[in-house]
Amino acid sequence: MKKVIFKSLVFSITFLFMQGNIIVAQDLQSAIKLTRSEQFCKADQIFKSILEKNPGDGSIYFYYGENYLQKYFSDTITYSYGEMADSAKILFQKGIELYSDNPLNYVGLGEIELINKDTTQAQKHFEKALSLLPSKTNKNSGLLKKEQAVVLIKMANAYLKAHTADSAMVFPLLRDAEKLDNKNFDL
Image (cartoon, rainbow, N blue to C red; front, side):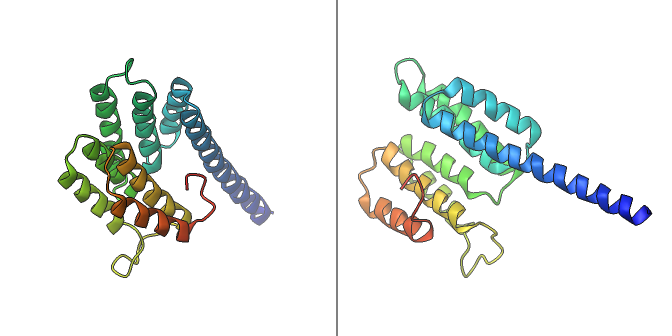
């Protein structure tokens, strides 16, 4: 009898834990969709609630920071680049502080540096992000191919947003991303 109760208790706890992770993933996707549709205030609220529930996920910090940058790019008259970039940078740095193995936040910092025309610093951040992807030298990375593709796409987008006319950097990133996940929405 005790075994049955114990098994059902373990099953219930596991089920609740899985439900919580699914809800956070759904909320993150909702917030990303709101950012894409330029509903930045609603996305901001969702990002805040997700971070309250799950502060240790580095991807949330990246997408939240990206929300600030997109807010600026959608209305450069109303929003100050300095304020939006500072807010995004704080979030990217917090994401790195809590989860340094997530390459997305390094891409975010690199994007800000590219926009600020500091290509040397941007390149350092991008190199760090690339070093965290699975490779012969980094076999411990657990990033899925879809996640790797997102990193490469976001890096290519950073070059485009910064108006860097360096197609020699952009196209190889996009080709590599396409090899990893050819059905990605952002390709």
